[in-house]
Image 1 (cartoon, rainbow, N blue to C red):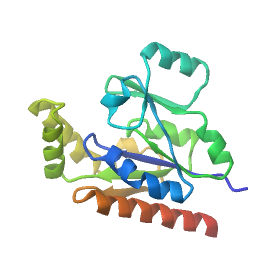
Image 2: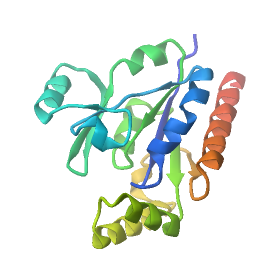
Image 3: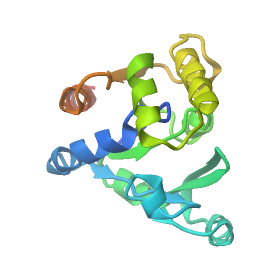
Image 4: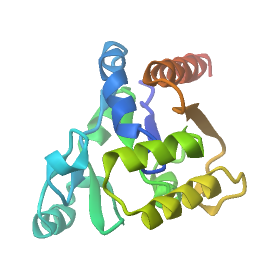
Length: 195
C-alpha cells in the first residue's frame, strides 16, 4: 500500500489558516483526508482552532512519553502533532496539519515528501484582520506585517529543503481560498496516483 502524505499548511499570524481549515474540514473529510488536532500550551478557547490545550508540564510529559510525531515552540507556546498521524499515513491516508514556518526545515527531515502549502494574504487585508482581532498593539501589528512581507521572499531560509512551496491566497474571500486549497490537494493526489 502506498504511504499517505502529510499536508503542512502554514502562514503568517492573521492569514486565516484556522478559518481556512475549518471551511475546508467537511470537504477534506469527504476526500478521506484527516485534519490533525494540535496540542498547544494554551486554552483551546484562546487558540482560535480546534486544539487541545494543556499545561507546559503536561506537554513536556507528552514529549517524554513519545506522544508527538512533531513538536516545536513558537511565540512563547509549545505545539505538538500527535503520534497517531503515523498510523493514518501508514494506512495510506493523507493528513493535514497546521504547521509553523520556523519548524518547516525540521519537519522536512522526518517527512521529506511534505506537501508544503503557504497561506498568503496581502498586507492591507492582514492589517485589517490584525486590528479587528485586537490581540496586538499597533507596533506589534507593524512587526507582523514586516514579517509577512519577508515571508514571500523566494530565498527565505524558512523554506529549508522544501522542493516546492505551494501558495493559497486568502486575501479576498474564504470561499475562494478554500476552493484553491481543495483544488491544489486534488491535483497533488492525482499526481501521486500517476507516479
